[in-house]
Amino acid sequence: MLLLLGLSGTYIFFFNVDQRTSNKRSTKVFSSESRPTSVRCHHKNDHSIPVHYPQPSSYDRTECFCTPVHNFVIVSMQRCGSGWFEALLNSHPNVSSHGEVFLDETKRDNFGSIKKILDTIYNLDWKSSASKNDCTSAVGFKWMLNQGLMEYNKEALAYFQKEGVSVVFLFRHNLLRRYVSILANQFDKEAKPLNGTHKSHVHSRFEAQVLAAFKPEVNVTHLPLYLRRIKEISHDTIASFKSVRHKIVYYEDIVKYPGQVLKIQEFLGVIPRKLTSLHVKIHTQPLSKQIQNWLEVYERLKGTEFEEFLGVK
Image (cartoon, rainbow, N blue to C red; front, side):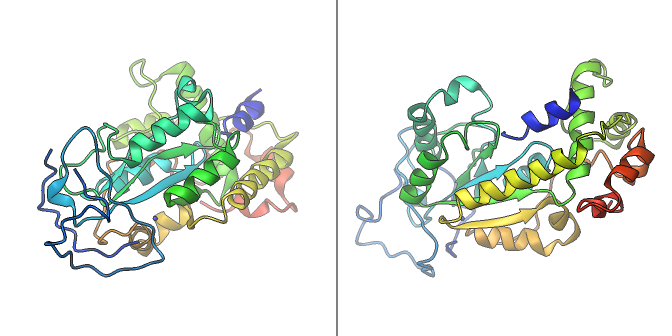
């Protein structure tokens, strides 16, 4: 049952500009055709990066007309560090990533409904805690694979191509660790050990230790098949959107190599800076100390293509 749960939970952009972060968001961005001819914007034009000049209907963005906007989307799976990753991006004053906007199934009944939301986000009319007072120069959201993306992959691809949306693929190298995280998160939803509250992400070491205390028992019978299927889904997703501007990143690489965060910011067309997140990692121990039936798992994966997952932290 837990194995099926993990599998079902799976289907789940650069313009180097003179970004004036002191320019506050007042309440019409000019399109490239409608910008005042008397005003010259001095910035380096990188034609490989699609940019736009949105004209929000909810506020006036006149002070930011020299700041073009790059559209992006984070494509990921549950328990791949996307919450932590998005929090990092949102700590940048010029980046707004609005979370899982299609978490509610009613918002993705058909692509017409999806398109309305995409249009609202990329026109800077979507309101969330990620909305910024400074001039936004990169705007996007998280689209998880179990939230309609692959069901409407052709329509989404056409939209991304037309609207110049760049894709950031965020996955994990160690799929076994991801699976353990899925099982632990499901346990937390049911048991709610933190004062009766379910938390997918925590902001204190104490909370992390409480959640990490649970050691799931992994069904090893179909484990290799499950891991192989998750790997195939990742590859299929990338193949479906490889024709649009994209960047593939892995959670482990971002954690291990700080330079990855700078490269991602460059990809999004914003001025690189140190980014921060309040998220605290839950599972920090070796897998041998996180899985109840570790010896069974070890023997099942030893000698397979997934053996490398056993020793990776």
